[in-house]
Length: 332
Image (tube, rainbow, N blue to C red; front, top):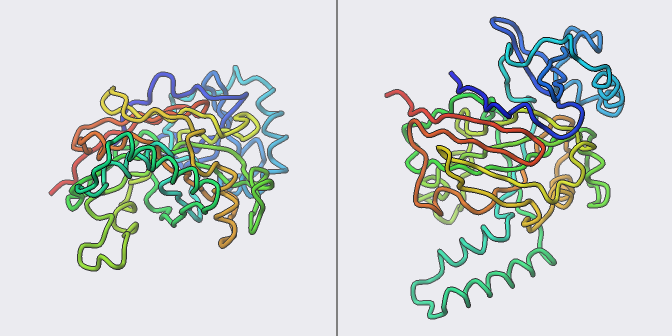
C-alpha cells in the first residue's frame, strides 16, 4: 500500500530527475522525469532492455551528457508520471550513514542529557556544548556506520512499524548517490564522485539503540535502524550539477502536517564532502551507493512524540522533491 504522492512532488531542481518506476503488473525501470511530470523510459533511450538505475549510475560519466540531451528534447508526447508507481530510485549495494552530524541537534542532546547535579544554567551548558562542537568540527572525524539496503522502501510506500519497536522515530536526511568509485579520496575530490542527491528518512527505534544486556557494547544499529522499510528513499535522484552546492539545502519533515524538522545543511558539523571522503578512507564506495549525511534537530524524542499507526510523514529537501509515507502498525 502507499499514500497518494504530494501534488508538488514532481518539482525538483534542474531540467530532469531520475526515478525508478513501474506500470501496473510490469517490471520496474529507470526513467528520466521532466519538470512537467512526463516520463521517458531509459531502457529504450539507451537501447538496453535490461538497464537498471544501478547500471546507469555505473556508467555515469558517459550517461550524463546523454541524459541532458534527452531532457532537452522536450517531452510533451511522453506519458504522464501519474500513470506509474514510484519506487526507491536506486537499489544500492552499500549504505553508509552519518550520525550526530548537525550542530544544533547535538547541542540539544548534550544539554538534555547532562548530569542532573550539573549546576550550570541552560545557557552556560549550551555555550559549552557549542564550543565542543566547534572543536569537533575543526579537529575530529565524522561518525559513520553501515546500514542495510534491505531497509530501503519507496518514497510513497507505507512504513510498517514492527510490534517490537517501542519508540519508532523519524530522521530526515540528505542522501548522497555515488556516481564514480571512490576510495581514499580527498575532501577536495569527494564531490567529483557524486552523481546526485536524494531524500532519505532514516527511521530509528530509540528503545533498541543501546544494548541493555551488554551496555559495554554500545549502539545496536542493526536492531534499531534496519527493519524492512525503515529507510524511505526518494522520490528522485537529482543530478549534482542541478543541485549545485549541497551545503545549504533546507531539510524539512512534517508529521501529520506539523513541522518537526526544519534546518539547513549548513548546520552540519562535517559537510557532505568531508563525510564522503571519510567513508572512502576505509571502504570503496561504488556507483549507486548511498551516503546518508545525518539528521537535524527535531526528532520525535525531542518533541516527546514518537511514531504510531496512521501517522503521515512528509519529507522535503530543497530541489529534491517531496516524499510522503504513512505509518502502519504491524499486524499481530
